[in-house]
Length: 142
Image (cartoon, rainbow, N blue to C red; front, top):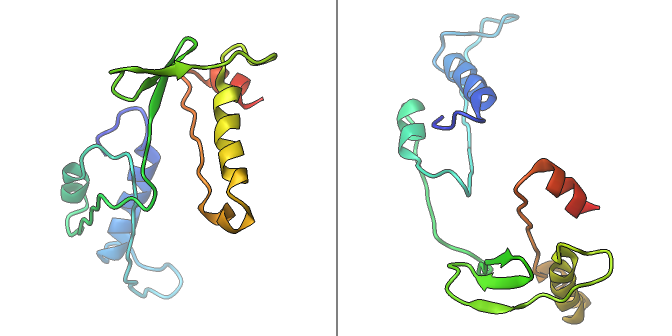
């Protein structure tokens, strides 16, 4: 819904479920009607209004609650910038075998998580690295 590059399979599945739930499709074996509830969650959906209207009787729940504060930075070359590119936070060290300087960043977060002790392991921080291409993702993952 609203995304030309992906989501068409999800749209087909939801459409079939909607037909099934409205009684236009019944169980082939017994002819029974089923009640259906679909719960969809997304942290990235830009607008819920098209999805809500497409699903007809959908209820939408949104929240801004974050149990862990979100920090984001942008790496440009060897420098780490604030998320809004307003300032350079610092220069990232060059490690052997890490020409993109990504490993150094992930290693820092891993060390911070490990240094707080075993009791805090369930509350440890994490890192998500977004890469521009599939090839870059594969290279970075190795």
